[in-house]
Image (cartoon, rainbow, N blue to C red):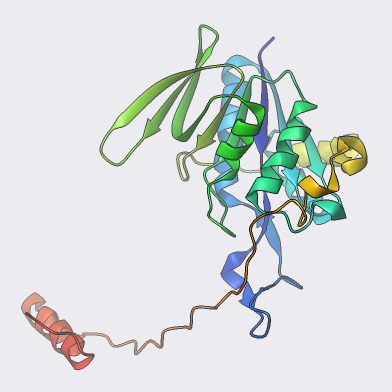
Length: 267
């Protein structure tokens, strides 16, 4: 029958061009294009490779505003079979705890599943909390920094690469794996898949009417984390000096002299 695979993705602002409101210290999101979190694309690629090798289906889940439909259409274009958009104003302002709780309740509606796949972290917050927290709500085993996955004798065999060694774990299903960033090369979109997504309308929208969660547990009300203040890092002026010679020793001396001029102390 194959594997029932669920991959989680996040719709994030393109942080390369995000600005900070100097008065409020918050992100200025108006007019800023959003993208699928790049590290989640590694998770999508892992899910699709598992499907190709062992059969089954891949369902994408995202908790985001309605504009995230464009992102879900993109990953359906990669080959994902079905997508679910968890979207409701009552989910807004959620920290990682409230987000993972909401996700876990949505995932319970998709049981039985075999494997949940998350990206390592998101470029808009970089907490790397969601995978572990979601697995904890669901009471299933999880592992981070995964670079390779196999399905062997009814268990998931996951390989992860640490700084100086590689570890291999076997996890019973259902389980959750968090894919290491840049662990694979996400495939390009196929136009035929994207057109199929539009024709079949295989993106479902779940609001809190479907999930029925208490307001005290979700969104801003369910979030114990508070951001008191955000300070933008000032840009560093660049002098853009360049050494034009060819001799390596002269280049090193020139560089050291310039650093000394900037206040470097040589011991």
